[in-house]
Image (cartoon, rainbow, N blue to C red):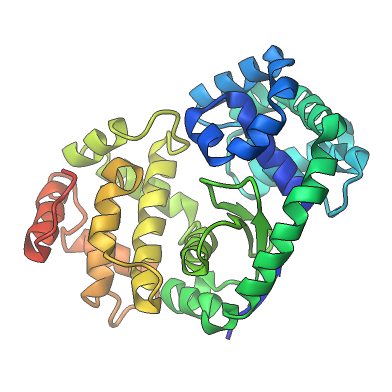
Length: 354
């Protein structure tokens, strides 16, 4: 069975709060208490708002970068010098670049050098500014007690969910997760996002029900379901399909799934997590969910979910093998996706997005 380590860390709430500089209506509604408390602090720094909004328009935001940076910092206290060290010490910044560009291949070196590295000094100033203008005291008084209460509640039910075991069975021995433990960092300012961290850890919002957090754990720990080189080849193979291109262009504004690789990886992951989530009783009405989530844009997820539900993995040792079988059988092939997608919804009697 999976062992759950449920905790919290100030640094992730600091990162999440910095997203309010985007002045996004959705974020302000979700975090109106904190936004109202620090309205003057936010309005006093229009340069931070300009940066945050330009990042958002490019498909990422301050939270994405700050969470990624803070994830590399082992410190879980409130020493702002320690928290910002990876953004301010050249040697540590190079370590950050090597990890995300070379080891994890999450961004290309060109994107890192042109889009990420130049804004890191400003993001460091942003985090320091928020910390030094009352956020830490506010968090200690208002957020930390609530986080402790939720952690106690979650701890009573977490051991029911064998997340690691179910994922390993799906991914196969080649892609087994290395540890039996999953670490959940509960946050006050994470919504509406769940975020994958290093070492089988992830970030989720304390207000969510635990069954929804289990679904997020499945999603984040499955990423990527197999080799990104293989996913890239499949994306290139499918990229001429009309429904896939239509869904790609219909995504919500400022999405981070802005390359064929990222788009298809999310589809594969989403289809797999919804299948496991239904099996574990944490995802209700999967087809309805897939028709609504991210404006219904994850069309391949529907075909992956349906294939897994019908037993496409029988006789295969991994999701990777099953997907290759679906390609060989023409289930996943350019020109066939719309028919497969609509057939699934028609048979289920559920309204499709496409």
